[in-house]
Length: 531
Image 1 (cartoon, one colour):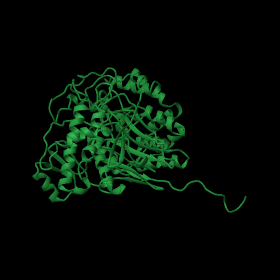
Image 2 (spheres, rainbow, N blue to C red):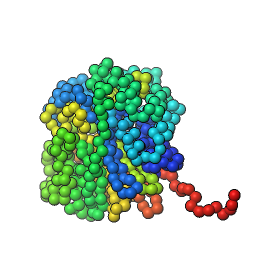
Image 3 (cartoon, one colour):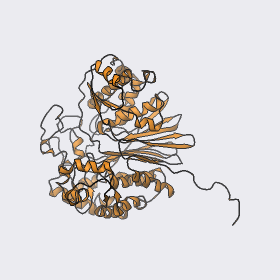
Image 4 (cartoon, rainbow, N blue to C red):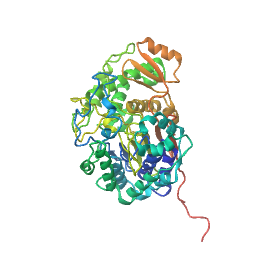
């Protein structure tokens, strides 16, 4: 089973499974394909992370997120405000659009290393679907076309970007055939030469020359010195289920476990899904999670993240006592900007290998800049750092940013039950939490769990997706919340559920998501005739 936020991404992964590859082969093929068909979300000059469960039950975690260049410094941007909502804004949007927003990429190196360590197929083989889609073309979805149209003013500032996504000066339309000849040649270069063509080779030289000419600070030394960050997963438990997720600097694993620990002391199932009490409790727990994220979370190479404390049952009991079912707790929970422009995919094979992978170029189309002649979009992950000096997530050379990515695998009795992940910036880990509750407490199917309406809050203001009854909105307002209905909380979610003898894949309506499975297998007995 492969679940991805574009059908061609899922098909690319299943193609590897059909060819005899494993789940890791499928995942890397899917991710490369997504750089072609979901380019506004993910690219080889981006970053991300993967949680892997091997067939023998062992776990691996790969953090290939971007890092700040060696020339980066805490005061490299001119901020416009020390308070929200403009806390993250800098003059000229330099941390958002253009070459000064670009961090040192980890995507390509991470994918190549993950494939070499845990896959069975060659890099050139798993890249073939992506090369085919780039060369032969694919039809633009409405999702892609709408994003291009919304960003046309930024995209047209960069001729190499506009040439692909605004042909003839106009945004592409849904159904248009998109061919990416330059990018197809870049992918072939990588297939032939491996990740080193970027991390010290000709592709890296092209990127650095372009960045330096425009005022960027990424150097060839940054590329050659980049290293992925393998780390131990974080673990917790909830009502007999084991929760296995990503470690710091991402907030996903630690704070999902923290919030589940707090909720374990309440009758979540008894409160019911989408009730006033149920939503109020969820909002209070999210507030606690964000409060602790801002207080404690950062790159463990630069700050001391108290993982053991945050994921302990004793700490949860203390935070649980602060929650009132009748009132809203008021706290300061500001956060650094993240973008919903991310992709998530998951793959599982018949042997028991599972991978949940979340990757990004940060904002839609990243920095909006494309290296001329390569088709390679550049990230704008410097935007995720706190642009103010002296904070846990302030800029420092070589530092990884705090993220909300939540590629999580859930087990029970030593066996995988489901994996979950999604896109949506700071709405990722709250939404992952809700999907887990939907399955464990509310008894939902995989599809129901990812489709169900969500909530999100950073204190008094509470976002609710459409679908909650009017009396629930009134009841929450009566408890002192500012209730706001929104089209979506977070983005496309993928889940694979493991049941006896079968896999169930599910994708939600918030992206172009598609689960694609392959069943059957080799003949298991002699044919009833001889040859």
